[in-house]
Image 1: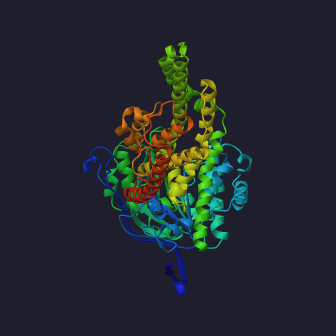
Image 2: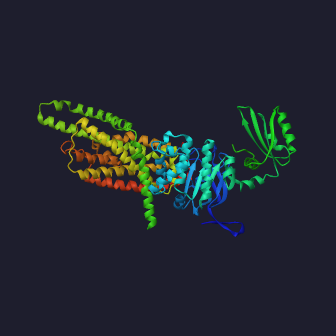
Image 3: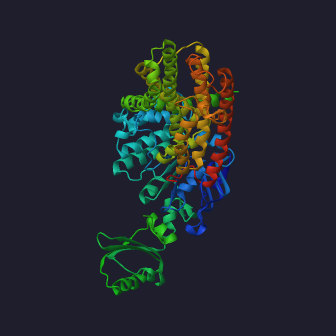
Length: 344
Length: 294
């Protein structure tokens, strides 16, 4: 088992550790025919020398936009994918060499998952998956009933899976993840596409699960800022396969405390490249709302005097400014400051 | 010792868990009776009518010896078709619900959950096979019973133990072969699907599902014996119909065929285990285990 030295000499057991973890996706060779040429899109570097240490009992978040490498990292840790180089240890075991003890201790739930069989009921589906972990049938059924009540699915227990809604299905997936009582749970965008209520139920249970039970670890990937901010003990910001920062949400926000965050809503802009050349602009992100013919801009400024130059540049394109707001830094601002792009 | 017992218990539970959807779920909707037992009878009926056509004159003949011999041969041929039609259900199940099942599981997102679980992959495939045998068995029994009743087939059960042994070893070998093919789907998706399509109709022909396979010649019959259904059907037909009816059209005697089937079953199961382990590692290296729409 690996340990991490902490302040005061305390040694924490590591649930997850990666050392220079790299994953390169190469073009595939089909069963029939030739391998596609590399210039058809080329190889993709999904993870680039990622090193992380996650102690037991932590709710750890991975924050990054689509394609940042979050799911690739989770799949390697869940023993579904081999790293190209580097090492990943889960519960002290190497994912490339010693998968059985890892698989006994982990489970994973992904957002938008459509697993299971439509002909089986909610209860039967979860029971089936519990059997793949060797959970004694009676214990599994009792635990399933308990979890179905917590997640508000008790009334749907005998419904066929094909007849339940997307939100109910995702709650069922969450029950599937918890029923095997894993030590380490991977949650890959678990609230993706869910309504506010369903998301809240899931978030509260996950936080409660880590807090009230010993030695339980959650690795959560999300691109919802609020979710990461509210739930995670620590967050790693990942972009283009690299970890850019890893700290508590509060400490991450402190990193840009010296900077100012300004948000503007303007008529749709044709040119935004010029903003990076304005003195005092540390970074900025742009998102277009085509339906409303608006552009939303977030600027991280090292010098507030840059605001006037920004406004001039916007008005110079004939665009009207509808709102201008200075706000406290959020995790998204941290992300914008580091990556120069928003998360959505 | 405890670790071994725990591992065996885990895999037995996994096997039962994976067979459950096929044993319980698949029989939940009664529409299967029509689609999976009555419709196959139409294919069988086509061959029955053709065979009837061959013997029309002989059956109407005033010569009692000729008439009896014709009726006996007709009964045997119609019986072959009914038996072959019943075995087709198992072959289709092996191709589409065993070998290619992992492709479908990947598409719906089940495969990554299976591969992440601590159970052995053989327990997963074993569960699919046990469930498949049960599910297809219920359909095959109905098809066989209706076929025998409807077409008036007379079976002679002289050695029930040997019949049962041939039947079960044939199924083990067939599903072992399906398990071996299943590993291909870990790596190749849609392309392996085409392989299953390719193996459907040609196997109907060379395995002699509707006629004694020896009619294709001894060389083809022996070559086709790599498909367990070929020898299984040949042995069952010998054991269920009087030797006088179509004697000389058999590949080998039933006991020899049973022994070959045992060897095939063992070889396919070993190959399935080896190829699963190899192709799973390759799929994990190439990132194909979890990527959909290949």
